[in-house]
Length: 273
Ligand code: PXL
Image 1: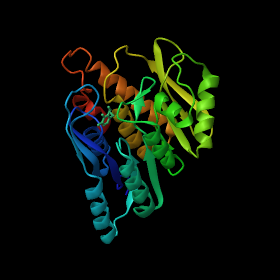
Image 2: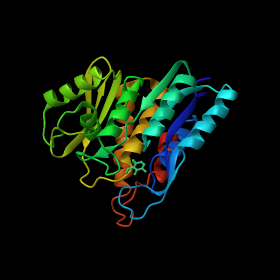
Image 3: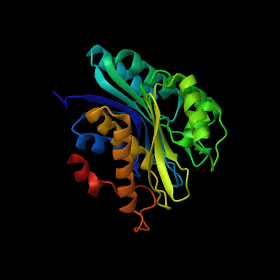
């Protein structure tokens, strides 16, 4: 049946903060997909602005979960990996890719590790090298420009032209990437957009809302995946996801207390349509 797809997603649960699994699950459910959440770790909050967050490492336990799934001979149509947080979880994603997918399954990787030109403080070059091992295995990668630069070793710039972005895409291809989405690409001060590469490079441009919000990358990736599974069109799916993110930011920015995530929930009904 059309919507009868099982997605296994490996990323953290940040209990408070509207990101990763707590964004992916509701969004993918709206698209009608059964989503199995395998938490790479559990955090009291995400790490983007809260002090004193608590982390529960689940990597050993998750391997036991996968042992169980292997004994049940479970297979999934989609593997969606995002914030992993630890090299050990990268190995778990390799294992999931090797043992739990079918011939035509899709592996989508959002290599979450940084933003605004910097890696998140908890990550270093070794982690980047570890994430790089997943790039050639994935069918689609969804880095933001910071992550694309970290993966390729290209210097991150605030101002650049289409040639610069083309070079980033080519270098990602050299790493073995097949289909590529790069978010947060801007050629004009008041515009922002998404680059998609399948056979050719396309660019979807939209308005830039000055105030960025935490968690928009996760909202984008989940919406993109839901749309892509519906229409198999990389550019169309990136457009739907980018437009949804803009709506979510607009729905959030007037609320000064809501700095930690986007208020996407009231807009989910739009995705169901
Ligand atoms: O939104 C990306 C993300 C996911 N999970 C955790 C994070 C972040 C970004 O900071 O800290 C735990």
